[in-house]
Every structure is written in C-alpha cells, then in structure tokens.
Amino acid sequence: MSKAAELANLIGNINAGGGGVNRNVIINGAMNVAQRGTSETGVGASSGYFTLDRWKYYSSGTAGRVTLTQDSSAPDGFANSFKVDVTTADTSIAAGEQVMIQQRIEGQNLQHFKKGTSDALPWALSFYVKGNASATYVAELMDADNSDRHVNKQFTVGTDWTRVEITFPADTTGTMDDDNAVSIDLQIILHSGTNFTSGTLQQTWGALNQTNRAVGISSIFDSTDRTFFITGVQLEVGQNATEFEHEDISTTLSKCQRYFNKLSEQLYGGYGSSSAADYATIWFPTEMRDDPTMTGVGTSNTAQNISEEFAQCYRVGGYAVWNQDATADAEL
Image (cartoon, rainbow, N blue to C red):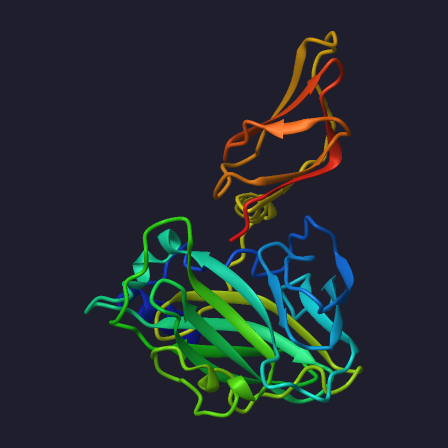
C-alpha cells in the first residue's frame, strides 16, 4: 500500500471515529510474546492456550493433530508469526468438527465501536498469512454478549506472505457489556464439518446460524503437509485497514500479563516453627484481569489470598516457596 493510500485510509477511519494511536484492540498481534513456550506438539485433542500469549487454539471433534510454534518466518517489518503445522491429517470430517484460532476481547476495550447503537461503527480487520498451498479459510467476529450474533468473511492463503484486509459492517443491534468479560471473539476458522458449512456465509451481522459460519472453507487437515502462518493481526474502528500498529515489547508483555504471568524467580518466606505460619508474597507486574488460578506452588505449600494484584504462598513450619515455573492464569 502506498503512503498516500495509507494516509487516506487513516484519515477516513479518524473521520469515522477511529484511527490514532492505540487503535488496535488485538493483543500480541505481532506474535512477539510466548510466555508458555515457543512450541507445543500433538495439539488437537483439547483446546487451550499452548504457545503464543492471547492466542487460543480451539479444537472440537477432529482426529487431526498439529504442532503450534512461534515461528521466525514473517513478512518484512515483523520478526515472528504463529505457525500451525499439521502432523496428523483428518480427511473423514464429521459434521460437528471445528478448529480455529481465537482471540477473546474484553467488552470494556470495545466500547468505541458503539455496537448496538444508531452510531455503530464498522470493524476493519487485517493480517498477514501464508501456507504451503492455496486454501480458503474464514474470519469471524462472534458477539458473546448477544446470543452469539456473528459476521463472517472468507479469505485466501497462498505460498507467499500476503496481507488480508477485511471490513465487517457496523452492527446497530446488541450493545456490548462494559466489563472484563469476553464480548467479541475474533476467530480464524481453519477446519469445519457440515454443521458449519451447509448454509450461506453470514457476511452481515445476524443471529447465530451455525450452518452459515464457515461456508466454502478448505480444511487444514486435508494433508500432513499443510501449514498455516499468521502475524500482524489488527482489529480497529473504520472502513479501511491501516498499517499495523507496532508497539515496544514491554507494552505488549504488560498487556499479556493481564491474562497470564509466568513467574521467573523463586521467592522465599522466613523460616518458622511447626506451629508458625510462613508467607511468601509476590506482586504481579500488572493488575490481572481477574483473580487468577495459581499453579507451581512448592511441595506442601498452599496458595491463598490471591487477588488481581498479588498472591501469597503459605506453609506451616518451613520455607514458603514459589517454584520458578509458577504461573498465574486469568485468561478469558
């Protein structure tokens, strides 16, 4: 895109109520933060956050398996991508199968889209993709606050990095809650059975119709050679996608730590007698979205008094210890 065209798009979005700094509501869109690790093999039997922060791999019903990695292949201007590499194919697709990559977005971060009002604004989605062969997948916005209203658009993937730009229309139906719960799911659908493909693709906002969600889609599990790479994901107010909004790594990490913290240091409380209580307290680097679930507490210790700001580890008659691999999880 030329600089003149980019400027015109930005001005158009500003006039529409968007634009400016902090316009991207996607966190870790450049795939730079991977606190859980950079690779996970054999994924597919369950859904979850396995590698890159804020990016959930959702799998239902398929026998297909993948390796998920933070990959160094990326278009100019980026260092990382999210790679899905098929290791087990699934060419016998049951009706209810579905696989997608998700980012779940808090309602309080989406109020400026004015969804559900007469002044509702359009949604501009953009990202870079490539694969090992031509394929067609579907991008979806799902409204979790209003009986799963949704809108869906196809996009194509080739063997070279290309930028996809999609405009979803404004929706004057269904306001979003102003809270820390999920209001919108951005979903990149990579595999679906006939329960999701037998209708007409829902290209304007409408009530949930499962058969309209992934019409015309390819299956990422049609071959063990299949790969899918994505990076530079941006969702913003406006009719036109603008240049990806890069941010420094400390900002991205802080945003990710609102949902998941991996503790990098051991903390010790004082030593006490068998009847004394020892505590170790850790303050999270940023306020978490909600009271987190703690893992990795030392043997015989108990995690308690956990809030969005801090957690205490408790033990009677000994050291209170957080293991180096302890985590605090407050994902949506």
